[in-house]
Length: 181
Image (cartoon, rainbow, N blue to C red):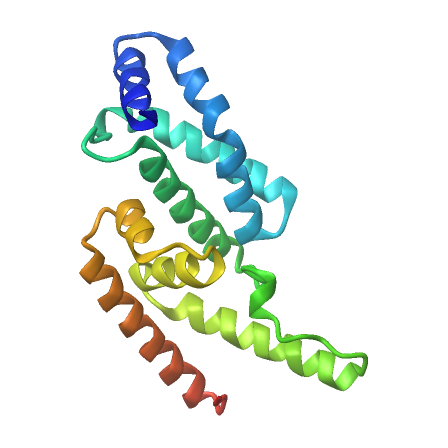
């Protein structure tokens, strides 16, 4: 039902009804902002990225394919914008608290965990965009394979293949740096 209503709002917006896009913004601004916040770890940056996502969505609205959910389409734009923002600013903040090993009370262990986190983030950023997206969606947002396939507009089999390859590449990158499990 949601995707049907969203498709109607997109059609209305493309017909010149600006209120229709405002409804879509109000409907999805919170999940888009929350995604950006989880990926960027900064409220101001997340707000900037969320605003950019809606501007880009509006500019590219005619490319929306009604065969897919609007939420999946705009979520993909948000993922790409967040990743691109990280690349542009060379951020080395955590993508998610799960990246950081549990910090202990000693400074040495805390420093080691910080170095490991930075190495992991660097390794993820060295992957191609396709591989970064499957790692982030699966391991930092707990998306199912089916949800990932929908968001990325690819078959579930391709999601599994990309995830397998991304993990293998991460292992190779980290092993080359002397980081093993």
